[in-house]
Amino acid sequence: MVEVQGVHKLFGDLHVLKGIDLTVQRGEVTVLLGPSGSGKSTLIRCINELEQISSGRLFVDGELMGLREKNGVLHRLSDKEIAHQRSKIGMVFQRFNLFPHMTALENVIEAQRQVLKRSKGAAEARAREELVKVGLADRMDHYPAQLSGGQQQRVAMARALAMDPQLMLFDEPTSALDPELVGEVLNVMKDLADSGMTMIVVTHEVGFAREVADQVVFMDDGVIVERGTAAEVIDNPQQDRTKDFFAKVL
Image 1 (cartoon, rainbow, N blue to C red):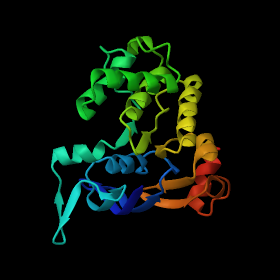
Image 2: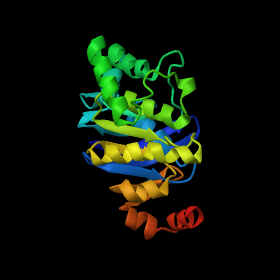
Image 3: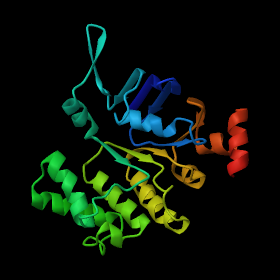
């Protein structure tokens, strides 16, 4: 589903990604772990074309993202073409980015209407379905200010899922939540993983990685230090940097 080939990303003189190679199979859950500033969030933002890579190539479902190759030369796609590519990728951020003047139901309807051009009836039916799945059947008519952080994040997840994504990206979805609310969001993500959704998750929740991940990727300083199953990377790391990290966080 995702193929990352030799990807570099620079912000001015800051070299954030240094030749990343990564494959994510369809239906697989890949969890990116590592210290802050290691490039995890930048990597998934590049996959979703929120950041433009400096070099290398990114493919989602076999399609080259953000670029078109013609006579051996790469050309940047138009904003409209990139938006079309991005429409098959769902993304959930640290912040919930809900419209404060819209109810939970209206928030989930809006993107479907604007991007997918669904009828109001079809968009509302789908929104209700996804809000029920994330456990918010009794909160559909509440505004974001009336919802807890965990509930707001679940609305954001329902909004992304209502767009029928082939791939879901999560950028530290629990980091802005109070500790007692983290579990309710992780439980929805576990259900999503069980349903066969392809997911790439940036998180500090090592327990979630251990329970759900098919592939754990440990990053530091813009490179992939180690990858494998949770048992291999978390419980039996081979690299000194990985050993040092997990000795401090576990």
